[in-house]
Length: 194
Image (cartoon, rainbow, N blue to C red; front, top):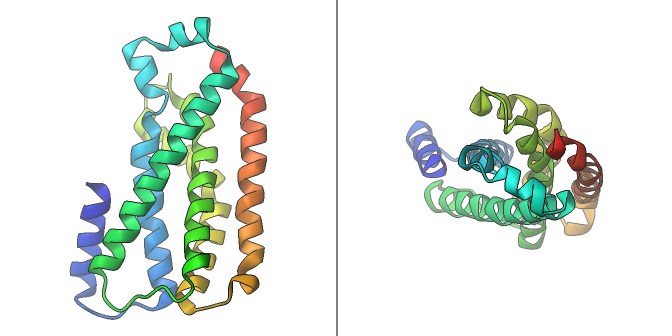
């Protein structure tokens, strides 16, 4: 609903004006960032609210819990991002993808990178009293490099830049995911037990 509401507000506020590629890329990533903030924050919160976190701590290894939640977040992020992209291009006129392979690669890597960043943050804030307010505040500095690389890569895909010329940002997105997954899997044991 957040994605649908945001796209509707963009359509009404632009009043059929043609968006530039840079502005369209930025707006699309803003929609995706905030939809991820609303959807992915509940990953560990539901375990704490239902009282199943203690059972998971006793019966399952922390790495199994982390990677299970990570894979769920990756799937959820891809669905959220896919919904945002479809609705955005369906209702916002005059914006076209000129390099489809680059566009798909950016959003696949962006979804994996977003999920890898917010999975550990969701575990950290699960026991906090102000979960909904704390999650975006902690996530924004961590996700800022991802959003900047994603916006630039999306602009390149909309502008028709060749895949080979946009590889620097794709490498940043891939390395970002690998580093965050490695660091999060090492730190998750401490976060999960405390």
